[in-house]
Length: 236
Image 1 (cartoon, helix red, strand yellow):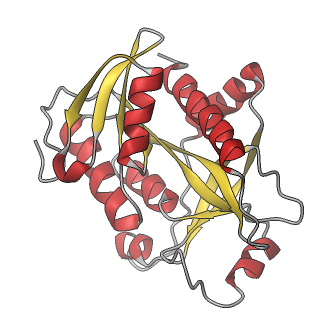
Image 2 (image 1 turned 180 degrees about the horizontal axis):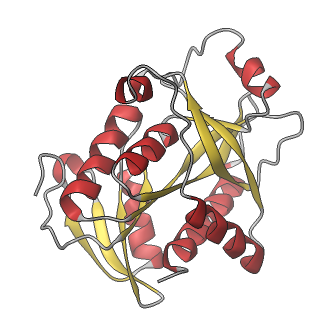
């Protein structure tokens, strides 16, 4: 048990799917896992462990923003021996003609936050996913015909009131999505020798303000969850 995860040391599988929303964690456990059991609920941040295709998998919510995800990732790796962490969340899509129905797979994550510099002696850290998980994710997407777009992303501390010109600058540098957690996930996984991946579902075109219709967004969310689960067990 840790200050934020009231579970036993053996309650989590080696692979954990991490949505931000505790209710999305519950949805995944109830919809996709068999014999799922809730293993923690401190601060209403739910965690579950069950089986997907007869392989043990856990789901643990991480909340919103770099400080929150950093707490849960650190504790999962260092107190519960978690080896693989796959974030699944929503994002703002960026680009000239963005595909609002394809799952975004982050091949890197820049950030406006100072957290990575604080961890890395003031230097800029290149936050990237585990290549093995990234390759497996691509293979799963091809095999299961899940529309995906692989590319660089940006982790921002501000959801509202972004600095003027930021989105245009991200677009200039061919960054395809903006969200609030991936850079921290990749950095902590590297520091503590775990494997990490981040999958994102577009919920809005950040450049135009066009929102993705609810039914279309849910369809992509389900494809993203399927892609995450299949990737998590692919090499087990």
